[in-house]
Amino acid sequence: MVRVLLVDDHIVVRTGLEVLLNGKSGISIVGVAADGDEAINLAKELTPDIVLMDLSMPNGKDGITATKIIKEYMPDTKILILTMHDSDEYLFRAIQAGASGYILKSSPHEELLNAIHLIHKGNAYLTPSATKRLMNEYLIKMQQEGLQSSYEILSEREKEVLVWIARGYSNKEIAEQLVISVKTVETHKSNLMEKIGLRTRPDLVKYAFQKGLLDFE
Image (cartoon, rainbow, N blue to C red; front, side):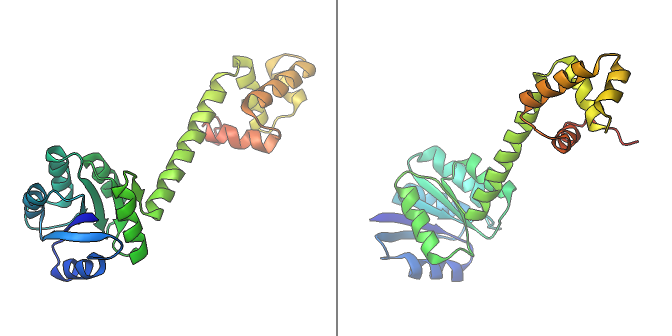
């Protein structure tokens, strides 16, 4: 049986969650609290497996503060944030405070039940919208790091050729600008495209733009 402490400043929400969860799917509601201070005291008294914690509570301590304090006193107690705030700021603050999960009040009941059991087993849970945003941020970061690392392995001459290509110059024009042979330009072009993993001139233009190498003044 998963022992859960409910924390929310709205009595209608607390009552609804208690009716929804108590005795369902191996869950037992061992207590309810209306603010962060009451949540801390009841958590110490009841030692629940999971605290289902609201974030925004105007009276007493808020959910973030209460989460941090509960985790300091009882590190084995899991905190699942249940909130209306689909916000990266609140999400990161909750995770930093020690929460094991973050789910929206608008989520289906089945999702909430699943989140409770996942956290009880030692897993983490994030609402799908938050997971998607974190994945997008991770992919963007990886892409930026990839761009940076690939650019750094280019030689100075290859970087020069890249800029001229991105500006729309032909191999012959680049050769004239750099006072080298057309064949040498082609060699540099081939080498730099292999290093950064690109195959066409439009790809090079996009790459140069992302690197901030183009000046359109």
